[in-house]
Amino acid sequence: MTKNFLNSGESIGVTAPAGGVGSGDGVLVGSLFGIAMFAADAGQTVVIKTTGVYMLPKATGAVAAGAKIFWDDSAGNVTTTATDNHLIGAAVTAQESGDPTVQVRLNGITI
Image 1 (tube, rainbow, N blue to C red):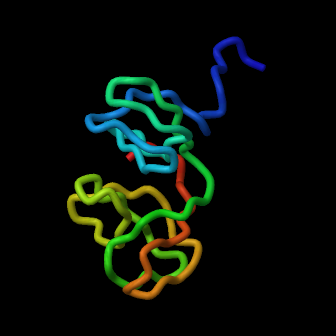
Image 2 (image 1 turned 90 degrees about the horizontal axis):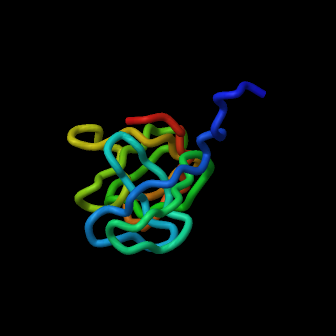
């Protein structure tokens, strides 16, 4: 192992944004996106997972399996609309327009 290795980057500690976060919430801090592993008040450190498959709330609209998925930070949900949103991964399953959630595989890269 190299002397400068810190961790795999699958779990990262970040400062919880204004309003705080709940366990399982999507968290966007600068260019980092992940899923909160526990609840934290604004300003506290929260660990986010940057990889894996998660069931996330979605905007209205059908989603095809394999579709690019973007995070809409103002709405707090995922969408297939790229404009003004952040690419976070791909849909694992297809979902109908009215379905409230979709399975998303996080891509683990900065956005």
